[in-house]
Image (cartoon, rainbow, N blue to C red):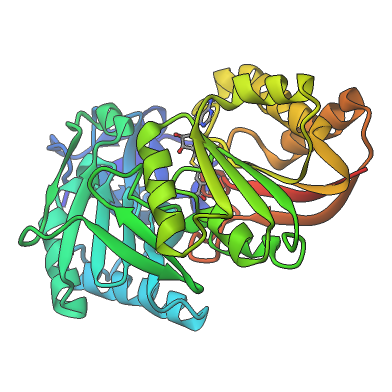
Length: 390
Ligand code: SAH
């Protein structure tokens, strides 16, 4: 097998568990390497670092799959890893709908697999992982006998790997829109046309934060997508819920979800831009008891942090002004570049500018089926607060 030898240097990041080897860390290799080929990585003193896949087109030239010199990368490897992922989820009490594989955090870099009951949605975000797609689909077929597997690789990040954006069946075709049940709430999920893999599993536990506080409350769910937070607010006794999303398709789906649960009277959804509506409602002196802000990532790179922080501050400040004294703000950022410290500072500044005192009720993070490996900072992306606004 071709050997990739690292330059002399300090590789604490790699040795503490981060699986990426950047192009500028590579010194030499023993033979020409094809895109996606499995290579062995050694440090400058010829010590084995790990085995992983190679892509010269990517800044992240090698992603390590194993640190065990005796472990080969083959079908059995994927079977073992995926089984370990499943056992971890079972241990934590997940049974039906969960993220089965969370890429780097599950030691399967570039691979995402969501399980929605009998259906699986798969993303291969790197060339090296893409090559194993059929093998992975076979492993899923044998282990779960699913009703269907769908590939949602319409993801721009694949361009950095020289891969096309695409989506299609990895099993026999099936109806891609189906119902899920999440803790007593029914939700239509469309794995072909929905956003990302169709449903945001990472907010699963955070929707429970509405329990108790939603009772009798007037709730505004900005960035509502198909209405998951809104539906839980209704389930937990909200007197009214208004959901807002810029996507007409999301709003139509949210409306359908509300009727599915007989929440049609309590929940209303509106297609509009939150950046337009929040200031407008502030002018109209509209008030809510709870506002949920779960926007898309405002930045996907370091260069965009400042502009993103301005965006986050704008919506949070406006929302704080629209909350009755004693009411609650559930606010999130899913951009890992917006680090917890920055998010915290932004909220403190927004509260000051809004003339409000905030009390932290809870700090929230991504669901447990999206584990965070401390040495892989990219794996820590979702953070949020329940704040009481006074
Ligand atoms: N809270 C949702 C997920 C939200 S994803 C859930 O739990 O399922 C972010 C949503 O924000 C997307 O549906 C996107 O269409 C919407 N969005 C993006 N920009 C927006 C804007 N300016 N105003 C309102 N919605 C917006």
